[in-house]
Amino acid sequence: MTSKLASLALAGALAAGIVLPGSLALAQDKPDKVTVAYFLEWPTANQVAQMNDTYSERLGVPVEWRAFGNGNEMTQAMVSGDVDIAYSQGFVPFIVGVSNNAPIELVGIAVTYAENDLCVVRDDAGITQENAKELEGKKVATPIGNVTHYKLLKTLEHLGVDSSKVDLVQMNPADAAVALVRGDVPMACAFGGAINRMREVGKPLMTGAEQEAVGINTFDIISVRSDFAEQYPDLVKEFLVVTEEANAAYKNSPEESYETIAKAAGMDVDATKGMLANFGFPTAEDQKSENWLGGGVQEMAKGVADVMVQAGGMEEALEDYSGAVDPSYLP
Image (tube, rainbow, N blue to C red; front, side):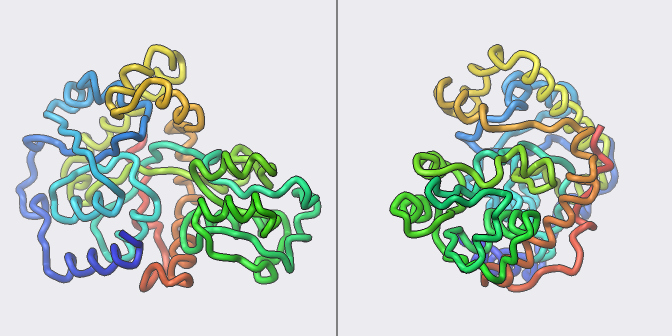
C-alpha cells in the first residue's frame, strides 16, 4: 500500500469514529493479554526473549506475537485496538499514522540498519565528501518521498551541497542500481539488495556509521497505542527492559542466538546471520541521546513528513511531531 493510500484509509477509519477498547475500560492492574505486532523474515535480537516466552513471564500476562505484512497494517491494527505494541514498525508508516491522528506513540528504537540505506557514487565520477558540491547540476537517482530521499537531502546539507541544484530523478532501488551501473547517473541512493549491485561500480558517499555519527539515521521503531501506555505504563516499561536485556545478551554472545532468532523469523540460519550483520540494536542510553529520542527522531519525523507531502505521498504534515515521541518508558 502506498503512503498516500495508507493515509486515506487511516483517515477514513478515524473519521468513522472507531473507539479503542482500552479507552473505555476501567483502570486495572493488567490486561488479559498483550498483543505485539512483528514481522516475519526480519530477524531481531529480542526474538530470543520472544521464543523463550520471557516477555510473558516478566510482564505477568500472556504476550501474543502477531505477524503483519507491513507497517501500515500495524497502524491500522492499533487504531482498531487489536494490537497494543508494534515492534520494528517502519518509521514512515508511523509518521503516516500520526499525521492522520492515529493514537499511537513512539517509545523506543527497535533496530538500526544504516548500512542498508546508502547513496553510492560511481568510482569513475571522482566525487567524494570533500568535493561533493560537484553533484550540483548532475542527476542523482533516488526513491522520492521516503526516508531514503530525506536522508539524501540531509547528507547533501551536511556536505555543503545545495540540493535545489541537484537533479533528483525518481527511481526505485532496482532501477537506481541499473542506472548507476550503466553510468546514467554519477550517484544513486537505495536500500536493501540493490546496494550490493551498486557497490560493484562505486562506493558510498557516506557510510552508515558516518551518517549515524551526524544524526542521519535509518531505523525501525517500537510504537504503542497511547491509551494502552497510559493505562499500563509499567507493562510498557517492562517490555522495554526485557528488550534491552535481550539486545545485550545478543551483543555478548551472538552465536548462541542465531538458531533461535532464525526460528522466530522463519528463516534459515545463514540468511539470518547475513541480515543481522547489518543490524544494530542501540542501548536505552543511546536511544535517549540527542541523536535519537532526545531530539533527533522528532526533527527527522517532521523532515520526512514534509518530504512526503512535497512528493505527493501524504496529504498534510503536522507542525510538530514531538508529542508522538515519548522516551520516558526507556529504562
